[in-house]
Image (cartoon, rainbow, N blue to C red; front, side, top):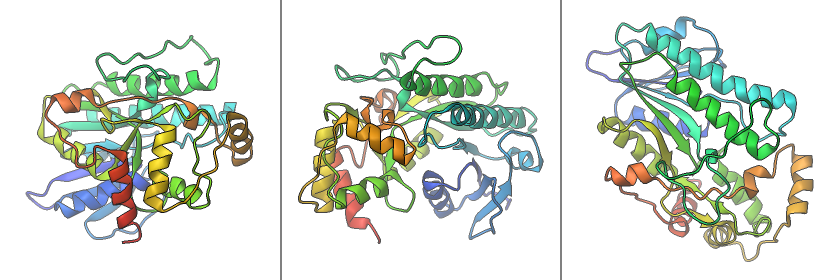
Length: 322
């Protein structure tokens, strides 16, 4: 690392959010190290180090002296919640978080801040009111195997965050990023997926359309990371989402307008169940009402460049392909 240059380490940083983070910090002049299961050639100010997400190895040396760690590792939940996939979802999050904690504990100069991915789905299905960090309700999960798919998603986040906050890293500030869906330009992101179905005329309301969608523009996500780096009092769970979640019906209407789609066929819950079966995914991802707001960020003075979804969707669409 060049003297005076800050270094950031991003485990699991090869995906959509990771690519935005690497470009962001490279643009700030930081040295960026991505931990990945795949071999990559270095590009620009970005280096790649191999890791398996579960065991200490040479990659752990990268954390010593780093200014920050942002862990994004975890198997995608866009799958069927069968026994094998459930185990992989649990293990990929818990093991990667635990081993990062072990690596930090062995550092002579541990990173001062550790961001760890989490999810806004930790809160209950909420139609009646918004959920922030102070008053949000986290449903209890029975010990052992969660009874249903909605319990499973909450249990995943509970275990994920427990691994983070149980880590023996007293000199490192820890932040659980309770992320909503993050929208922006680029392949592999949720905007691309929503955009594709909308332009095919399939962007009508899903289910009853009353369930809330929590969302976040990727530019505001990057600004949140910078804000948390600069504000040392921020730690613990932090909701990273727009302050304006929207009912699914209105959310998709605004998306259709941004994409120039003249109509969108609605999909009843039973149609979604059939589609989810053949697409090897779960309707919980679409039908759970995630009415989440960023209470702690707003209280700390953070302001949004893209607080409203209709404007945010139009901004992303304008820059699509640019």
